[in-house]
Image (cartoon, rainbow, N blue to C red; front, side, top):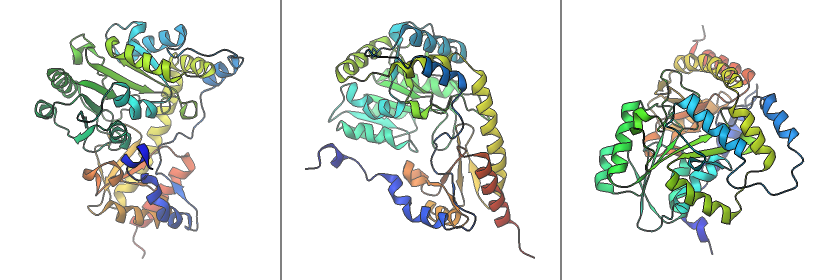
Length: 371
């Protein structure tokens, strides 16, 4: 009896075992640039808040503390110029992967309902729809919604894996198209702090939504922004008519963020200094890796934002994975993210500086002819 697991694809990372083994055999060791997990320290301001709230004998509330909700509202208003938000518009979540995976179910979707996801996308959008029995359609064209009549539409900017950033006009087109068919538009903005060649815009911005949150949800994570992946800290904000039923479902499910984590979130959202420090770290790594990959024959596509470089040599992504594994560098194959990624690899910036420097050195050496 397989149950829900029978609806799901094989876990993609298991297919990298052979490449990992080959990369690990490199005489100078493995450089793992495959997974986007933060490696830099969690900010001291966050750690101090966590410790100061360690004495937490009672159950936390699913809706979060007033202090946390206020911090979310202030952050969205000040950093993302959102429309005016109240406490009914925000909800903390146990890491955004959980929300992405369970949002279709928590919205009441099921068999016969359509969920639209990007053609090249974070796999959990697809998984979440399949968990509730909904039909998944991949499309990057907002005009297609008129024919598809979806119940839920996912957009992602800056995008994982390819780093493309949607401008305000593009976001506006998605908002208008989703509203025209009565669909919920869920905007994954978890990489919003990391725009390199363009400035990300939130779907909560009135220039995008005409001052109305109707049908809109914005998803944010502190994993990348504040190196808090181990805290499982995120939040969703938007239409109060959508947030309220999500809150009710989560109350019944016991999906409560631990009190110390809530305190850490509030502290992190109130401080932009550590975000700027982290941006500078990732930018340095990007400036090392990008020219090194290009020297080794890879074209870097999109990659205007997020924490990855989306690269191709015009060959099968698995051939590129194998080539880089021969240099001791492990990357993610583009076929993890949809059919349109089959000639690409995703190279993460989330590795220690010395690893990134080693990878760049090996790539440049590969590009230098032996005399």
